[in-house]
Length: 144
Image 1: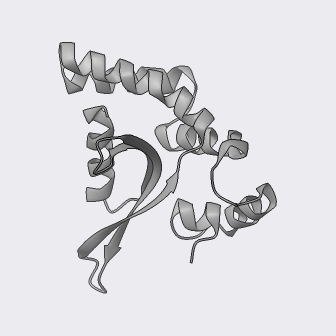
Image 2: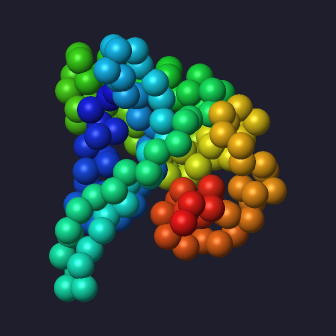
C-alpha cells in the first residue's frame, strides 16, 4: 500500500470527511486481499469525533487490476523520492484524468460491478446510489 493513500485518508478523516479507498490488507495467514473501505467519522452531539468506522466490501477484480499499477508506481516513487513526490504524482495522475480521488475510485467501482463478489444486482446498486445520504457504502450498497 502506498503511504500517500493512508496520508490522504487521515487528512480526510481529521477533517471529519468520509473517504472511500481501495486497501490491500493482510490476513492472519499472511495472504493479501483487497477491499473497498469507506471510512466514516462518528461525532457526538457537540461535533467532537468519538470514533471512526470502516465499512468494507470485497473490491471488484477488474478495479483491483487497474489500481495495482497505480499503487505500485506510487510505492516506487515513495521509496525513491518520498511521500511528497508520490503525492505530486497522484495529483498529476488524477488531473490527467480530469478527476479527483473520490470520483476515480467510485468510477472504478461502478464500471466494474460485474466483477463484484457480492450478491448486489446493478438495479439494487443503482437504487442505493440514488439515496445519496450517509456513507458511500450506505448509498451504493444500501447498507443500513
